[in-house]
Each structure stands twice: as structure tokens, then as C-alpha cells.
Length: 114
Length: 110
Image 1 (cartoon, each protein chain N blue to C red):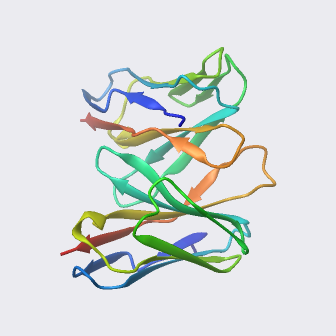
Image 2: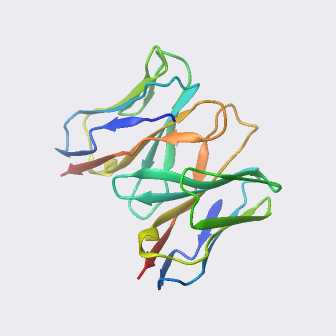
């Protein structure tokens, strides 16, 4: 079984709809992240959480919100989806106990907003 | 804001050729990581370099961290179609989160 899972893997929705993307991990890591990937723009950090009570905005948090329901679960919400939020979304985890901040990524969610 | 610039953005070569991908910054990083992402999957860590001037080899891949810890390169010898993918560098400043480059898309044709 995969260590970092994301649901759904693909989603098509309409402008104005509320969407939730979910991420679960079995690695026991304390840090979790949400990234957005667009062609030619690399990975842009949306939100990150260093533990259950810690939530931080990344470089492109506008239009998004997150919830850290447990150490293993971190969800991303689009309150009112718009077409320019069409992208590939990745969840990642990392372990503060390691010597470096290696990140482990989920398989991604492809979101299309019509 | 720390930036990592990768070059080239896209590289299309024939099987057997050699190539080098560069990752440059004006900032110093405590470590630098290289990831490879295949279509339909998330990035996967290839290597982490920590010491200035460090060279690490992973089969046909050679990674180098600059002496000043501001830049890095990835050299692939005798590229194979299985090397096709998006290569991302990421810098760890030691403060909070990684800084990712925009990536180099490599296509190796048989």
C-alpha cells in the first residue's frame, strides 16, 4: 500500500462549487504539505502543517483553506472553485527527525474547473 | 524570497547521449535535493547533497553541490528512455520549507 494517498485522483467540477481534496499518510510523519503544479511553473506551496495544531500559509494560499484532522490526515478545500485553479495538486509529508527535509509525495489529484 | 533556477527547461535527446541539468541560486542552502517525477506520479527523491563540493553518484547519474552551496548539477551518462521525466531540484534553507525549481523536462528517445 502507498504511504501517501490522495483522493480523488481526478475531479472535474464547475465554477463556484466547493471542492475538498483529501490526503492520508501512514509514514507517521508530523509535517504535511499541499502543493499545486502547473506546466512550466514547478511546485508552488499552498499550505503546510508542522503538527496537528499548526497551519501555515504558503506562497499561493488565496482561494484555498486546509484542515489537519489528525497527524495522518490533511485536507485541502477550494471554497468556490474558479477555472484558474485547474491544476495538478500534490500532498507531501516529511519527518523532522531526519537529518534533511526529504519530502514524500502522493500520486496527485488532477482537478479541472470548468 | 529564495529562488532556484533550473536550466534547461526542456531537453530532448537520443538514447546514449550525455546531458547535464543545472540548478542555480543566489542563496545559500544547507542541503539540496533532486527529485524525478514521472507522468501521472508524484516526485520521488533521487539524492540529497549536503556538503559544499560534494559529489554523489547513483548508477549513471552524478550529482554535484557547488562549493558555496548555491548551485548544483545533475549529469546523466548514456541516457536511456527510462530516464525520461521531470527533474526537480529543491533547496533546504533550514528554516521551514523547501524551495523548488521549476524543473527540467527530459525526453530520451530510443
